[in-house]
Image 1 (cartoon, rainbow, N blue to C red):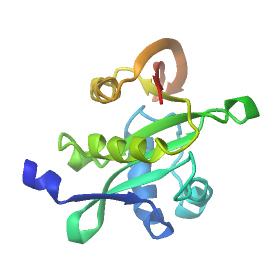
Image 2 (image 1 turned 120 degrees about the horizontal axis):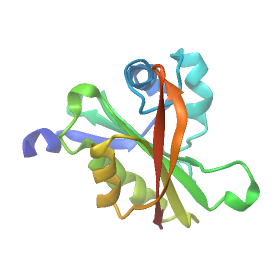
Image 3 (image 1 turned 90 degrees about the vertical axis):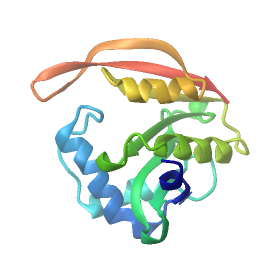
Length: 172
């Protein structure tokens, strides 16, 4: 396993990644309750999301690729927590890993890079909403110092059932 992880490179996301990032996200839209989006996106529909994560500033997009192939294995983002001005120093973070790339430390590499980048920004708190159950995501966030702040019960409806979302926070 260490050699597989050593081949992974993490870098800021760029516009050329849009198709692969959209395909990865659409997997989670179609197959899971990890995201509460219910309709898949075209790359053009997803372009504003990509462009809202520049290479600098508090709202970042970090992409993990497989060595020389540049195949996207996952991505992590920090996005605005809420649109009101008083929330400017808070971000919401998320991680998506390709289904065939799990359990290789990709999420850890992505969060390492994201939080290293955010250390130079004026960000006070990071929040993460985790649809339940999702033990892997919970473990990842707790490993990075996130603490459970509360759970919204049956807050989302997808696949004909209601889902809880546990909210985690981390001081930066």
